[in-house]
Length: 274
Ligand SMILES: [Fe+2]
Image (tube, rainbow, N blue to C red; front, side, top):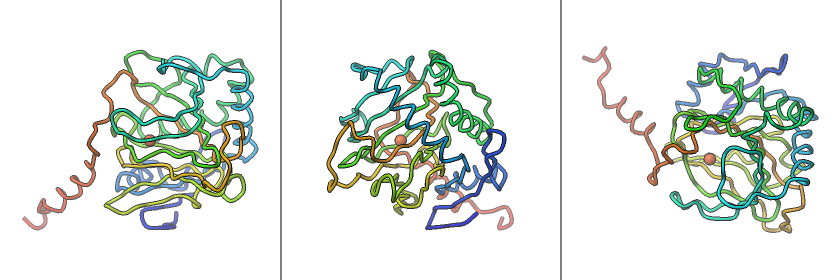
């Protein structure tokens, strides 16, 4: 475990029998996340396995028409996003592939995706004390596994946030390598009015953990490159959102609950002082 920048902590892990096992207990990882810090887990998932997720996603997308119309949250779909979110006004430009119905994919493809998404699911369950499985559950929170491509030449995601629950901890797994497969763009956060940029710190196989109500964004890929939806170059990540799509959306005001909590703790006299 090592603090590599202010509020940015790297934690080693072992990838053993399809599980991500951190060098420190899961409770300790969650304590660091909630403090809050950005925690980078070096998952140890083999590079080949990660790159296969990109290849498989591209092959699937090549034979699956782009989705149009409102999201239904009950299928496998991919969309080229280019809009400004209604409530939070966060602008975005990226290509996402969501596999809400991952279990319905044909067997080899399903097994390929599960080789990465199952370790992520088990890791999240261990962190949050849940025991959730994949599958669509109308009216309840469930997993929305996603592979996101940030193309070269100006993809990004503006500052936004999410309700803390039921996700608690957001996870972003790097599927390719900064400095090799792409040269700009990364996820940024704000903690105690301090900006934490993870660009350049996250290697292939590193999984960023963050308290889900922290304001965050994806800084743009360089405009010096030519933009193309078709070019697979650029940053690829796997994420595992867990929410009820028909539940209450995030508030338009930024949640700073953790800041208030820290403040409250300082203002409350300790038992020793009473
Ligand atoms: Fe987000």
